[in-house]
Image (tube, rainbow, N blue to C red):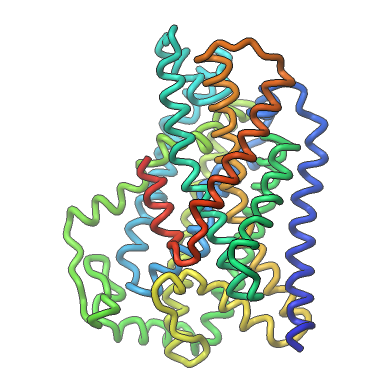
Length: 422
């Protein structure tokens, strides 16, 4: 039974990964210039633009870090983070997207550092180099958090060595990113956002059922001091309520300010085919973000209910971030169909990871080849050489990220917190 279950889970994941690689291959033939490779020729539609931006934003944090925090300490920390991100998402689309699309198109900027240099008339390209270096430095640990999520996924479910799982994930992500470029990254992000949404919905509905219903979930959560409060958290070690002061709430919600400086999100604004379609993209993105993060927080609370009902083992420390993985494992035990469904759920975690890692590696690569080598160092290179440097940079970033995430006890939430601060 175990072998049959694992077979169908792996089948669903392999099919998903194969689709990603096929998309990369299909779009590999459309990269005729650096603008195509980095910006998709500015031909993205509103749906692809919206979902690609949000899928690349959320990362494994949505399906691992966020539910894990809610499971351990209640809704306060997770909810204020989610609220800040939802508000930040809308503000970014409302105030930044149209102006960035219009101006970057007028001046021919194809990367965010390129935009800054031309916008502020940086003739020496100092701003270009500094902004590119910041992107590279902080995107590497962010990519590492994604690889850590992949390692935890396969290690907890199949017992595959954590480091080996990371390397396999990196190879796949690098594969379709270096072949298909921005077009492939955006289309795969759209597919991945759909898989992520399906995973969240399935886990939430199933979890409520196994926890004894919504009333039982709320009763179990309310029994823990501070667990359902927006002004305090539940402390696992002491079993008591810890107050959340106003300054802490503001600093937690301030995560949303990070959107204004996230190149892998901003570049989506630059790539849409028509700036007038950004209004539709904003609506799609804002609604999806609210729904997805609400589901993520609720899964943490429902997970506690499952633990109290005896349907899920007690999860401590960083293991709380595997809550969706554990629930998927429970779902898989019924029959072949549920094993396939579990595989889709686990593919959702991979999707959350891959949709961010590919975008960040591409943004960092453009910083090296386009902004540092071409603009700052003023080395005259052909389009072909420029693309080669970008692809080699992607490989280098993947290698360094694997090294940084080599510790299986690393927390996805904490790694993302550091990277987001940059």
